Every structure is written in C-alpha cells, then in structure tokens.
Length: 153
Image (tube, rainbow, N blue to C red):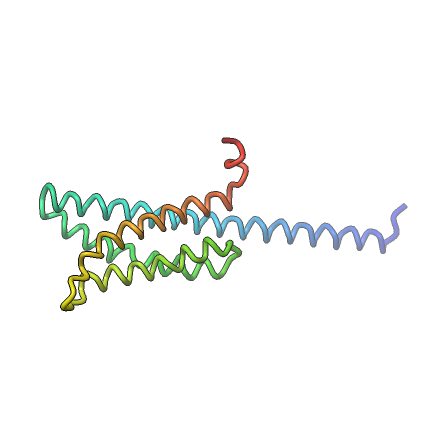
C-alpha cells in the first residue's frame, strides 16, 4: 500500500514531467514558427530575383513589384532576428539570422548611396549572397528540427 508521502512524490514527479513535456512542445512549436518564417523569407527572396529578371528581360513594370517586395518582406529579417535570440538555436543559425538584416542594409546602401565609386555593382552580388544565406538558414533550421530526416536519406 502506498503512503501519502509516496503518492505526493509520484504526483510531483508526474507534474514536473508533464511541465517539461509541455515546455518542450511549446518551444518546438515556436521553433517551427521560426522555420516557417525563414521559408517565407526565402520564398520572398526568390520572388525578388524572378521579378528583377522579369523587369530587365521582359517588361519594366515588374520593377515596381521588385521594389515593393523588398519593402514588404524586409521586416521579416528583424522578426527572425528577435526570434532567434528568444529560443534555443545553435550558434550557426544565429549567425546566419544576424547576417540577414546586415545584408539587407548593404543592399539598401548600394542602391541608394551615391558615391564617386560605383558601389551599385555590388547590389546583385549582395543579393545572391542574401539568397544563399537565407537558403542555408532554411536548411540548417530544418536539420535542427527534423534530425531524423537527415539520417533516412
């Protein structure tokens, strides 16, 4: 027969275990939210590249969409930046996330800053770096969240 003391210890242990499971589930959901936002950011960058190509090679009206896209999704980089410091992510994920707003800032400077040096030539290079960093971020976060999928292939 169980004593009241043993019963209380068992209840406390179960409560602690359930709290831990709930915290893990909640944290995992928030990390999945980060993953979803990083995918959305990446898709926006892909749309950026497509619209600039359409503007250059097809119809100049696409340029307005190119400009509106960056104004619309650039705030996502700041949301991701705040997100990555609130929850447990590996250092590599943090560094990739930190680089997103920095690269976006450089994008802005290269296109809007008028200097005697033609720094605008770096705009497409920084853009492709941004796409590469964003794609790597999506890949890394996916590996953190779903490590078993990596082992199956």
